[in-house]
Image 1 (cartoon, rainbow, N blue to C red):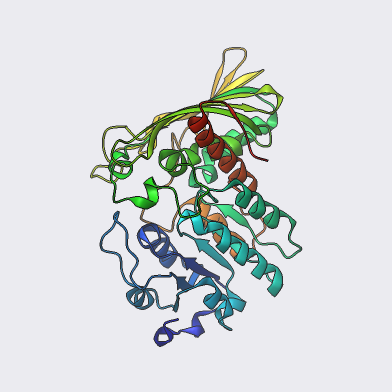
Image 2 (image 1 turned 180 degrees about the vertical axis):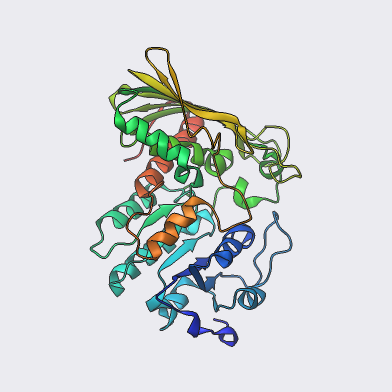
Length: 397
């Protein structure tokens, strides 16, 4: 720990005491600025194994010593060191985990068990994907749902799931207005060739060091958002059982850049999903090029259509299509919104739900819990196994 920057007096019961684990590109560009602008939050610790975080996506990341000064908080080299600190560990209300995918399980397990041991909820916001390993995802899900009280929240940061349109779509499905779900189509195109076709972006394009990943690329990096949205909105209706998938790959990196999958769910429900990183443009150019999203959920009595460009709210809308031929437009004033990538303000709805949980509020919205995280991991794992074998593969239970 950098003891020269201790400021224990900032610990308070009136604000959410939040620790950030991982100080890379996303943390320095989004999480830390968002948290620092929120008057209901104290940043009580920053944890990273490296004194100087590095990322090809931002070559100008601050070292931990500068982050300690900027955000007036101590920094630690490990989660264990942070939790063992007598002031921080006992008082932290929640942790945001923004580290490489392969580390999510170990960190998540350690935090969940710490919450149980200390008798105070440990709220967790885990960056996506929850893990890249089905067995680890099962373990985290079981731990998050079976630990004795007091339980904290366990949220996965699929920000699209927490938006008003997703909440409304889920309410429509659960109300029975579209009847029984029988078929789903989902498509996502992202302008991210600059990531998946660059050999230097190892973390995005190569399997991690765990030895359990069959591949890496667009499926883990982007399609996880689409899958999580569909699994959340559909309630407990969609449970993936068998997957067939074909992929193509970057000649420079070997990362998967496009895929087409058929997902067979319980009760014979079919789910057709495809995606690609080959949308022309750049998501971080000026002006940025948005992702193209098309989601349709068909039931026995109606359907939900949600399509658009996530950088243009006027490009689409949430529709309930009725069996009689009528169309209801929901969230008309909001238009189309998917992921929240705004670097300004106090952050997306997913972060606000996490902070509400840290403050002890009981009405925080659960847009992506460990169950949604697990289904997403199960599906993507089966997609990779299918594209290797050339056959439909059973989901690992």
